Image 1 (cartoon, rainbow, N blue to C red):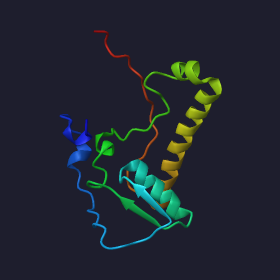
Image 2 (image 1 turned 60 degrees about the vertical axis):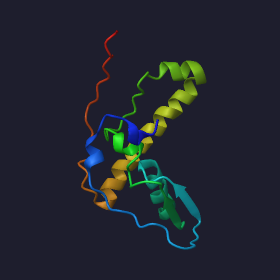
Image 3 (image 1 turned 90 degrees about the vertical axis):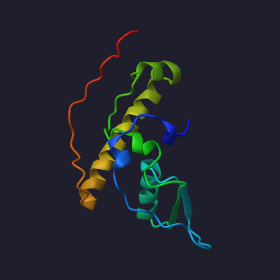
Length: 134
């Protein structure tokens, strides 16, 4: 299902963001990023920081896909825990997955600080609660 057709609404879906201009004419870049959600824009940000020229393309508004449905909460916890991942792929892969998530959170915190982004980033305790059995 296309995320835009889902019935639930998040606060981000009613948040005004800058409108991107349509691509007009021919252009060139070192890299073309498809998607202007958090993953695509983060990728573009990192590439630009490494000296690449980047064009970002999207079929919709900036951040209007899966990113619009996020809670904007960052966590190293996995919904099903690390045991199923460890069982399926091994302890080393589970460890690397945790380290990758932790590094991503650290990077987001650093970018917010370095760029002076007033996003209320803060580290707080998290709790994993089991869903009721039906």
